[in-house]
Image (cartoon, rainbow over all chains, first blue to last red; front, top):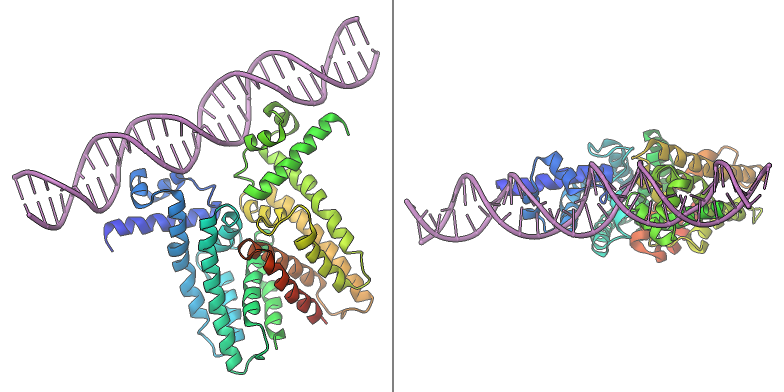
Length: 195
Length: 195
DNA sequence: TTTGCGACATACTAATCAGTATGTTTATGT
DNA sequence: ACATAAACATACTGATTAGTATGTCGCAAA
Protein backbone atom coordinates (compact mmCIF):
# COMPACT_ATOMS: atom_id res chain seq x y z
CA UNK A 1 0.00 0.00 0.00
CA UNK A 2 1.38 3.37 -0.99
CA UNK A 3 1.79 6.07 1.61
CA UNK A 4 -1.06 8.05 0.13
CA UNK A 5 -3.40 5.07 0.27
CA UNK A 6 -2.35 4.53 3.88
CA UNK A 7 -3.23 8.13 4.72
CA UNK A 8 -6.62 7.75 3.09
CA UNK A 9 -7.52 4.55 4.88
CA UNK A 10 -6.21 5.97 8.13
CA UNK A 11 -8.61 8.90 7.78
CA UNK A 12 -11.45 6.49 7.12
CA UNK A 13 -10.68 4.22 10.06
CA UNK A 14 -10.32 7.07 12.53
CA UNK A 15 -13.44 8.71 11.17
CA UNK A 16 -15.35 5.50 11.67
CA UNK A 17 -14.30 5.36 15.30
CA UNK A 18 -15.30 8.95 15.94
CA UNK A 19 -18.54 8.81 14.02
CA UNK A 20 -19.39 5.56 15.75
CA UNK A 21 -19.19 7.28 19.12
CA UNK A 22 -20.40 10.80 18.32
CA UNK A 23 -22.57 10.44 15.25
CA UNK A 24 -21.87 11.67 11.75
CA UNK A 25 -23.20 15.19 11.99
CA UNK A 26 -21.63 15.83 15.36
CA UNK A 27 -18.20 14.74 14.24
CA UNK A 28 -16.36 17.66 12.68
CA UNK A 29 -13.59 17.50 10.15
CA UNK A 30 -11.39 19.18 12.74
CA UNK A 31 -12.20 16.37 15.19
CA UNK A 32 -10.97 13.87 12.65
CA UNK A 33 -7.86 15.86 11.83
CA UNK A 34 -6.97 16.19 15.51
CA UNK A 35 -7.04 12.44 16.13
CA UNK A 36 -5.39 11.41 12.86
CA UNK A 37 -2.54 13.91 12.90
CA UNK A 38 -3.46 14.64 9.31
CA UNK A 39 -3.92 18.16 8.03
CA UNK A 40 -6.87 19.73 6.32
CA UNK A 41 -5.02 19.81 3.04
CA UNK A 42 -4.52 16.06 3.13
CA UNK A 43 -8.15 15.46 4.00
CA UNK A 44 -9.50 17.53 1.14
CA UNK A 45 -6.97 16.05 -1.22
CA UNK A 46 -8.43 12.59 -0.63
CA UNK A 47 -12.11 13.59 -0.30
CA UNK A 48 -14.05 16.31 -2.08
CA UNK A 49 -16.12 16.97 1.04
CA UNK A 50 -17.45 15.43 4.22
CA UNK A 51 -20.25 13.61 2.45
CA UNK A 52 -17.90 11.84 0.05
CA UNK A 53 -15.80 10.72 3.00
CA UNK A 54 -18.92 9.47 4.76
CA UNK A 55 -19.94 7.42 1.74
CA UNK A 56 -16.47 5.94 1.42
CA UNK A 57 -16.62 5.15 5.13
CA UNK A 58 -19.79 3.11 4.61
CA UNK A 59 -18.62 1.16 1.59
CA UNK A 60 -15.04 0.65 2.74
CA UNK A 61 -14.17 1.01 6.43
CA UNK A 62 -17.49 -0.09 7.88
CA UNK A 63 -17.80 -2.86 5.37
CA UNK A 64 -14.32 -4.19 6.10
CA UNK A 65 -14.94 -4.01 9.84
CA UNK A 66 -18.16 -6.01 9.92
CA UNK A 67 -18.28 -8.19 6.83
CA UNK A 68 -15.54 -10.78 7.50
CA UNK A 69 -17.08 -11.29 10.92
CA UNK A 70 -20.48 -12.08 9.43
CA UNK A 71 -19.19 -14.43 6.77
CA UNK A 72 -17.05 -16.38 9.19
CA UNK A 73 -19.89 -17.07 11.61
CA UNK A 74 -22.25 -18.14 8.83
CA UNK A 75 -19.99 -20.97 7.71
CA UNK A 76 -19.07 -22.44 11.07
CA UNK A 77 -21.73 -25.11 11.50
CA UNK A 78 -23.93 -27.26 9.25
CA UNK A 79 -26.94 -26.07 11.29
CA UNK A 80 -28.29 -22.81 9.92
CA UNK A 81 -29.91 -21.93 13.25
CA UNK A 82 -26.57 -22.23 15.04
CA UNK A 83 -24.91 -20.10 12.41
CA UNK A 84 -27.44 -17.28 12.54
CA UNK A 85 -27.42 -17.37 16.31
CA UNK A 86 -23.64 -17.22 16.32
CA UNK A 87 -23.65 -14.32 13.88
CA UNK A 88 -25.78 -12.21 16.22
CA UNK A 89 -24.00 -13.47 19.31
CA UNK A 90 -20.66 -12.65 17.73
CA UNK A 91 -21.71 -9.18 16.68
CA UNK A 92 -23.03 -8.45 20.16
CA UNK A 93 -20.28 -9.96 22.26
CA UNK A 94 -17.18 -10.79 20.30
CA UNK A 95 -16.59 -7.92 17.97
CA UNK A 96 -13.56 -5.94 19.15
CA UNK A 97 -14.89 -2.67 17.79
CA UNK A 98 -18.42 -2.44 19.11
CA UNK A 99 -19.73 -1.90 22.63
CA UNK A 100 -23.19 -1.91 24.15
CA UNK A 101 -22.85 1.74 25.08
CA UNK A 102 -22.36 2.99 21.52
CA UNK A 103 -24.27 0.32 19.64
CA UNK A 104 -23.46 -0.62 16.07
CA UNK A 105 -22.05 1.91 13.59
CA UNK A 106 -24.27 0.70 10.76
CA UNK A 107 -27.42 0.83 12.85
CA UNK A 108 -26.46 4.26 14.14
CA UNK A 109 -25.81 5.63 10.67
CA UNK A 110 -29.12 4.34 9.36
CA UNK A 111 -30.92 5.97 12.23
CA UNK A 112 -29.16 9.28 11.81
CA UNK A 113 -28.56 9.67 8.10
CA UNK A 114 -31.21 7.71 6.21
CA UNK A 115 -33.78 10.48 6.65
CA UNK A 116 -31.30 13.28 5.99
CA UNK A 117 -29.60 12.32 2.76
CA UNK A 118 -30.67 10.40 -0.29
CA UNK A 119 -27.14 9.25 -1.14
CA UNK A 120 -26.53 8.01 2.38
CA UNK A 121 -29.86 6.21 2.35
CA UNK A 122 -29.02 4.49 -0.92
CA UNK A 123 -25.59 3.43 0.30
CA UNK A 124 -27.07 2.07 3.53
CA UNK A 125 -29.83 0.29 1.64
CA UNK A 126 -27.17 -1.48 -0.39
CA UNK A 127 -25.42 -2.65 2.77
CA UNK A 128 -28.72 -3.80 4.23
CA UNK A 129 -29.71 -5.75 1.15
CA UNK A 130 -26.34 -7.41 0.98
CA UNK A 131 -26.68 -8.56 4.57
CA UNK A 132 -30.25 -9.66 3.98
CA UNK A 133 -29.28 -11.74 0.94
CA UNK A 134 -26.44 -13.37 2.86
CA UNK A 135 -28.72 -14.36 5.72
CA UNK A 136 -31.40 -15.53 3.33
CA UNK A 137 -28.91 -17.69 1.47
CA UNK A 138 -28.00 -19.34 4.75
CA UNK A 139 -31.66 -19.94 5.58
CA UNK A 140 -32.28 -21.46 2.15
CA UNK A 141 -29.29 -23.72 2.70
CA UNK A 142 -30.94 -24.83 5.94
CA UNK A 143 -34.19 -25.39 4.08
CA UNK A 144 -32.51 -27.57 1.49
CA UNK A 145 -30.77 -29.52 4.24
CA UNK A 146 -34.18 -30.30 5.68
CA UNK A 147 -33.76 -28.07 8.75
CA UNK A 148 -36.72 -25.85 7.90
CA UNK A 149 -40.01 -26.12 6.07
CA UNK A 150 -39.91 -25.04 2.42
CA UNK A 151 -43.00 -22.95 3.10
CA UNK A 152 -41.19 -20.42 5.26
CA UNK A 153 -40.75 -16.92 3.88
CA UNK A 154 -36.96 -16.83 3.91
CA UNK A 155 -36.80 -13.15 3.03
CA UNK A 156 -39.09 -12.17 5.87
CA UNK A 157 -37.13 -14.27 8.35
CA UNK A 158 -33.88 -12.68 7.22
CA UNK A 159 -35.36 -9.20 7.65
CA UNK A 160 -36.74 -10.14 11.03
CA UNK A 161 -33.32 -11.23 12.23
CA UNK A 162 -31.91 -7.88 11.16
CA UNK A 163 -34.83 -6.05 12.75
CA UNK A 164 -34.15 -7.80 16.04
CA UNK A 165 -30.48 -6.88 15.76
CA UNK A 166 -31.33 -3.22 15.21
CA UNK A 167 -33.67 -3.31 18.17
CA UNK A 168 -31.30 -4.96 20.58
CA UNK A 169 -28.50 -2.57 19.64
CA UNK A 170 -30.71 0.35 20.48
CA UNK A 171 -32.02 -1.14 23.70
CA UNK A 172 -28.49 -1.99 24.74
CA UNK A 173 -27.71 1.71 24.89
CA UNK A 174 -30.12 1.99 27.78
CA UNK A 175 -29.97 -1.46 29.35
CA UNK A 176 -26.31 -2.32 28.85
CA UNK A 177 -24.61 -5.55 27.94
CA UNK A 178 -26.60 -7.62 30.41
CA UNK A 179 -29.65 -7.18 28.21
CA UNK A 180 -27.80 -8.79 25.33
CA UNK A 181 -27.72 -12.04 27.28
CA UNK A 182 -31.42 -12.23 28.01
CA UNK A 183 -32.17 -11.11 24.47
CA UNK A 184 -30.10 -13.97 23.08
CA UNK A 185 -32.19 -16.46 25.03
CA UNK A 186 -35.32 -15.07 23.47
CA UNK A 187 -33.61 -14.99 20.06
CA UNK A 188 -32.72 -18.67 20.32
CA UNK A 189 -36.34 -19.37 21.20
CA UNK A 190 -37.43 -17.43 18.12
CA UNK A 191 -35.11 -19.40 15.83
CA UNK A 192 -36.36 -22.68 17.27
CA UNK A 193 -39.96 -21.58 16.77
CA UNK A 194 -39.39 -21.51 13.03
CA UNK A 195 -40.61 -24.83 11.75
CA UNK B 1 -53.21 28.20 30.46
CA UNK B 2 -51.40 31.50 30.89
CA UNK B 3 -49.71 33.11 27.94
CA UNK B 4 -46.28 32.33 29.36
CA UNK B 5 -47.16 28.67 29.76
CA UNK B 6 -48.44 28.67 26.19
CA UNK B 7 -45.14 30.07 24.94
CA UNK B 8 -43.23 27.43 26.83
CA UNK B 9 -45.28 24.52 25.54
CA UNK B 10 -45.18 25.99 22.05
CA UNK B 11 -41.38 25.94 22.18
CA UNK B 12 -41.45 22.35 23.35
CA UNK B 13 -43.88 21.17 20.68
CA UNK B 14 -42.03 22.86 17.85
CA UNK B 15 -38.71 21.62 19.20
CA UNK B 16 -40.07 18.10 19.27
CA UNK B 17 -41.06 18.34 15.61
CA UNK B 18 -37.67 19.68 14.57
CA UNK B 19 -35.64 17.31 16.73
CA UNK B 20 -37.76 14.42 15.51
CA UNK B 21 -36.75 15.18 11.94
CA UNK B 22 -33.21 16.50 12.34
CA UNK B 23 -31.94 15.00 15.55
CA UNK B 24 -31.21 16.78 18.82
CA UNK B 25 -27.65 17.85 18.21
CA UNK B 26 -28.33 19.02 14.68
CA UNK B 27 -31.26 21.18 15.71
CA UNK B 28 -30.02 24.61 16.73
CA UNK B 29 -31.72 27.03 19.08
CA UNK B 30 -31.93 29.41 16.13
CA UNK B 31 -33.76 26.73 14.14
CA UNK B 32 -36.32 26.51 16.89
CA UNK B 33 -36.67 30.26 17.23
CA UNK B 34 -37.17 30.66 13.50
CA UNK B 35 -40.09 28.24 13.36
CA UNK B 36 -41.72 29.31 16.61
CA UNK B 37 -41.55 33.08 16.06
CA UNK B 38 -40.20 33.29 19.58
CA UNK B 39 -37.08 35.25 20.43
CA UNK B 40 -33.94 34.14 22.13
CA UNK B 41 -34.83 36.09 25.23
CA UNK B 42 -38.07 34.15 25.58
CA UNK B 43 -36.33 30.84 25.04
CA UNK B 44 -33.71 31.45 27.69
CA UNK B 45 -36.31 32.82 30.05
CA UNK B 46 -38.12 29.48 30.01
CA UNK B 47 -35.06 27.19 29.80
CA UNK B 48 -31.62 27.59 31.33
CA UNK B 49 -29.99 25.95 28.30
CA UNK B 50 -30.57 23.54 25.46
CA UNK B 51 -30.13 20.48 27.64
CA UNK B 52 -32.82 21.55 30.08
CA UNK B 53 -35.18 22.09 27.15
CA UNK B 54 -34.34 18.67 25.80
CA UNK B 55 -35.10 17.02 29.13
CA UNK B 56 -38.40 18.87 29.41
CA UNK B 57 -39.15 17.77 25.87
CA UNK B 58 -38.73 14.12 26.87
CA UNK B 59 -40.79 14.25 30.04
CA UNK B 60 -43.49 16.57 28.71
CA UNK B 61 -43.97 16.97 24.97
CA UNK B 62 -42.86 13.51 23.90
CA UNK B 63 -44.64 11.92 26.79
CA UNK B 64 -47.90 13.71 25.99
CA UNK B 65 -47.63 12.81 22.35
CA UNK B 66 -47.18 9.07 22.75
CA UNK B 67 -48.60 8.08 26.09
CA UNK B 68 -52.37 8.56 25.59
CA UNK B 69 -52.02 6.56 22.39
CA UNK B 70 -50.43 3.63 24.20
CA UNK B 71 -52.87 3.56 27.06
CA UNK B 72 -55.90 3.70 24.79
CA UNK B 73 -54.82 0.73 22.69
CA UNK B 74 -54.00 -1.38 25.72
CA UNK B 75 -57.54 -1.22 27.07
CA UNK B 76 -59.47 -1.85 23.88
CA UNK B 77 -59.92 -5.63 24.00
CA UNK B 78 -60.08 -8.35 26.66
CA UNK B 79 -57.41 -10.24 24.68
CA UNK B 80 -53.93 -9.11 25.67
CA UNK B 81 -52.46 -10.26 22.36
CA UNK B 82 -54.89 -8.09 20.43
CA UNK B 83 -54.10 -5.13 22.62
CA UNK B 84 -50.34 -5.38 22.28
CA UNK B 85 -50.66 -5.95 18.56
CA UNK B 86 -52.90 -2.91 18.27
CA UNK B 87 -50.49 -0.82 20.31
CA UNK B 88 -47.67 -1.50 17.84
CA UNK B 89 -49.97 -1.30 14.84
CA UNK B 90 -51.32 2.01 16.07
CA UNK B 91 -47.88 3.47 16.72
CA UNK B 92 -46.70 2.42 13.27
CA UNK B 93 -49.73 3.35 11.21
CA UNK B 94 -52.18 5.51 13.07
CA UNK B 95 -50.15 8.06 14.94
CA UNK B 96 -50.57 11.48 13.30
CA UNK B 97 -47.12 12.63 14.31
CA UNK B 98 -44.82 9.83 13.20
CA UNK B 99 -43.82 8.68 9.74
CA UNK B 100 -41.77 5.77 8.45
CA UNK B 101 -39.19 8.15 7.02
CA UNK B 102 -38.31 9.77 10.34
CA UNK B 103 -39.08 6.90 12.68
CA UNK B 104 -40.09 7.43 16.29
CA UNK B 105 -38.82 10.41 18.31
CA UNK B 106 -38.20 8.33 21.43
CA UNK B 107 -36.27 5.65 19.53
CA UNK B 108 -34.28 8.33 17.74
CA UNK B 109 -33.40 10.15 20.94
CA UNK B 110 -32.27 6.95 22.64
CA UNK B 111 -30.05 6.17 19.69
CA UNK B 112 -28.53 9.63 19.54
CA UNK B 113 -28.38 10.83 23.12
CA UNK B 114 -28.14 7.81 25.41
CA UNK B 115 -24.39 7.45 24.78
CA UNK B 116 -23.72 11.19 24.91
CA UNK B 117 -25.32 12.35 28.12
CA UNK B 118 -25.96 10.76 31.46
CA UNK B 119 -28.99 12.91 32.22
CA UNK B 120 -30.56 12.15 28.86
CA UNK B 121 -29.89 8.47 29.35
CA UNK B 122 -31.55 8.51 32.75
CA UNK B 123 -34.59 10.37 31.46
CA UNK B 124 -34.92 7.96 28.56
CA UNK B 125 -34.47 4.96 30.85
CA UNK B 126 -37.38 6.22 32.92
CA UNK B 127 -39.58 6.44 29.85
CA UNK B 128 -38.50 2.98 28.76
CA UNK B 129 -39.22 1.42 32.13
CA UNK B 130 -42.60 3.06 32.30
CA UNK B 131 -43.51 1.60 28.93
CA UNK B 132 -42.11 -1.78 29.90
CA UNK B 133 -44.13 -1.87 33.11
CA UNK B 134 -47.28 -0.92 31.25
CA UNK B 135 -46.83 -3.70 28.70
CA UNK B 136 -45.91 -6.18 31.40
CA UNK B 137 -49.02 -5.31 33.38
CA UNK B 138 -51.09 -6.05 30.30
CA UNK B 139 -49.31 -9.39 29.79
CA UNK B 140 -49.89 -10.33 33.41
CA UNK B 141 -53.56 -9.46 32.99
CA UNK B 142 -53.60 -11.88 30.06
CA UNK B 143 -51.88 -14.51 32.19
CA UNK B 144 -54.46 -14.17 34.93
CA UNK B 145 -57.24 -14.38 32.35
CA UNK B 146 -55.79 -17.71 31.26
CA UNK B 147 -54.52 -16.45 27.90
CA UNK B 148 -50.90 -17.26 28.65
CA UNK B 149 -48.92 -19.73 30.70
CA UNK B 150 -47.92 -18.51 34.15
CA UNK B 151 -44.40 -19.72 33.40
CA UNK B 152 -43.71 -17.05 30.79
CA UNK B 153 -41.18 -14.38 31.66
CA UNK B 154 -43.47 -11.38 31.36
CA UNK B 155 -40.66 -8.88 31.74
CA UNK B 156 -38.66 -10.46 28.95
CA UNK B 157 -41.68 -10.54 26.65
CA UNK B 158 -42.38 -6.87 27.32
CA UNK B 159 -38.79 -5.97 26.55
CA UNK B 160 -38.88 -8.07 23.42
CA UNK B 161 -41.94 -6.23 22.15
CA UNK B 162 -40.14 -2.93 22.68
CA UNK B 163 -37.00 -4.30 21.05
CA UNK B 164 -38.99 -5.28 17.97
CA UNK B 165 -40.56 -1.84 17.89
CA UNK B 166 -37.15 -0.19 18.01
CA UNK B 167 -35.94 -2.46 15.24
CA UNK B 168 -38.86 -1.94 12.91
CA UNK B 169 -38.69 1.83 13.36
CA UNK B 170 -35.07 1.78 12.27
CA UNK B 171 -35.63 -0.59 9.37
CA UNK B 172 -38.58 1.51 8.21
CA UNK B 173 -36.18 4.35 7.54
CA UNK B 174 -34.64 2.28 4.78
CA UNK B 175 -37.52 0.05 3.68
CA UNK B 176 -40.43 2.45 4.07
CA UNK B 177 -43.96 1.92 5.29
CA UNK B 178 -44.49 -1.25 3.25
CA UNK B 179 -42.12 -3.05 5.57
CA UNK B 180 -44.34 -2.20 8.52
CA UNK B 181 -47.04 -4.39 7.00
CA UNK B 182 -44.92 -7.50 6.56
CA UNK B 183 -43.36 -6.91 9.97
CA UNK B 184 -46.80 -6.86 11.58
CA UNK B 185 -47.55 -10.29 10.13
CA UNK B 186 -44.41 -11.66 11.70
CA UNK B 187 -45.20 -9.82 14.93
CA UNK B 188 -48.62 -11.43 15.12
CA UNK B 189 -46.96 -14.80 14.58
CA UNK B 190 -44.58 -14.01 17.43
CA UNK B 191 -47.42 -13.12 19.81
CA UNK B 192 -49.26 -16.31 18.90
CA UNK B 193 -46.12 -18.36 19.47
CA UNK B 194 -46.18 -17.36 23.14
CA UNK B 195 -47.91 -20.18 24.93
C1' DT C 1 19.55 18.56 -13.68
C1' DT C 2 15.28 20.22 -14.32
C1' DT C 3 10.40 20.06 -14.70
C1' DG C 4 6.02 18.78 -13.15
C1' DC C 5 2.76 16.66 -10.50
C1' DG C 6 1.20 13.94 -6.55
C1' DA C 7 0.67 14.59 -1.74
C1' DC C 8 0.34 17.18 1.41
C1' DA C 9 0.62 21.83 4.87
C1' DT C 10 -0.97 26.51 6.52
C1' DA C 11 -3.77 30.29 6.79
C1' DC C 12 -7.71 32.03 5.93
C1' DT C 13 -13.21 32.98 5.29
C1' DA C 14 -18.12 33.33 5.96
C1' DA C 15 -21.58 31.07 8.31
C1' DT C 16 -23.44 29.14 12.31
C1' DC C 17 -23.43 27.86 17.10
C1' DA C 18 -24.86 28.22 22.38
C1' DG C 19 -25.15 31.44 25.45
C1' DT C 20 -25.11 36.39 27.67
C1' DA C 21 -25.90 41.29 28.62
C1' DT C 22 -29.00 44.50 28.73
C1' DG C 23 -32.72 46.52 27.35
C1' DT C 24 -38.21 47.00 26.93
C1' DT C 25 -42.93 45.67 27.44
C1' DT C 26 -46.79 43.65 29.78
C1' DA C 27 -49.44 41.97 33.45
C1' DT C 28 -50.75 42.09 38.26
C1' DG C 29 -51.42 42.97 42.88
C1' DT C 30 -52.24 46.97 45.93
C1' DA D 1 -52.65 54.89 39.29
C1' DC D 2 -48.46 53.00 40.45
C1' DA D 3 -44.77 49.91 41.63
C1' DT D 4 -42.68 45.74 40.57
C1' DA D 5 -41.55 41.69 38.70
C1' DA D 6 -42.61 38.49 35.05
C1' DA D 7 -42.15 37.88 30.25
C1' DC D 8 -40.14 38.85 26.72
C1' DA D 9 -36.87 41.46 22.73
C1' DT D 10 -32.33 42.87 20.63
C1' DA D 11 -27.69 42.97 20.07
C1' DC D 12 -23.85 41.12 20.98
C1' DT D 13 -19.64 37.48 22.02
C1' DG D 14 -16.23 33.89 21.38
C1' DA D 15 -16.02 29.39 19.76
C1' DT D 16 -16.68 26.15 16.12
C1' DT D 17 -18.07 24.82 11.52
C1' DA D 18 -17.21 23.17 6.34
C1' DG D 19 -14.73 24.52 2.91
C1' DT D 20 -11.05 27.34 0.07
C1' DA D 21 -6.81 29.57 -1.49
C1' DT D 22 -2.40 29.15 -1.86
C1' DG D 23 1.95 27.52 -0.74
C1' DT D 24 5.57 23.68 -0.21
C1' DC D 25 8.00 19.43 -0.53
C1' DG D 26 9.73 15.14 -2.55
C1' DC D 27 10.12 12.11 -6.19
C1' DA D 28 9.80 10.35 -10.99
C1' DA D 29 10.24 10.93 -15.81
C1' DA D 30 12.61 13.57 -19.50
